[in-house]
Image 1 (cartoon, one colour):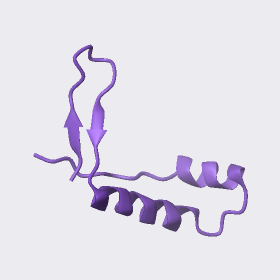
Image 2 (cartoon, helix red, strand yellow):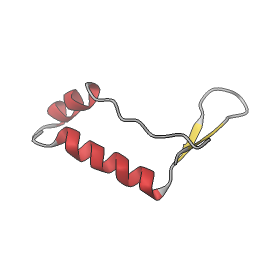
Image 3 (cartoon, rainbow, N blue to C red):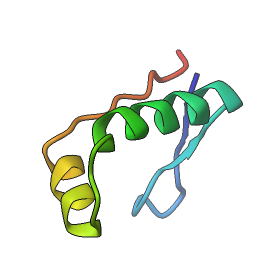
Image 4 (cartoon, rainbow, N blue to C red):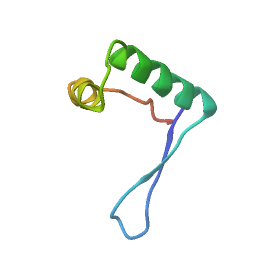
Length: 57
């Protein structure tokens, strides 16, 4: 599970991903972009998609 690491200056948070998280994201990316032939098609498909990563509690 992903673990959010708070940043001291509060600008951006870091998200530590496990190997399983990375594999899950890559699988989801492949499913979403299946059939896309150009960068424009990939960007369009990804802009319409939502990919969730569970946070460690």
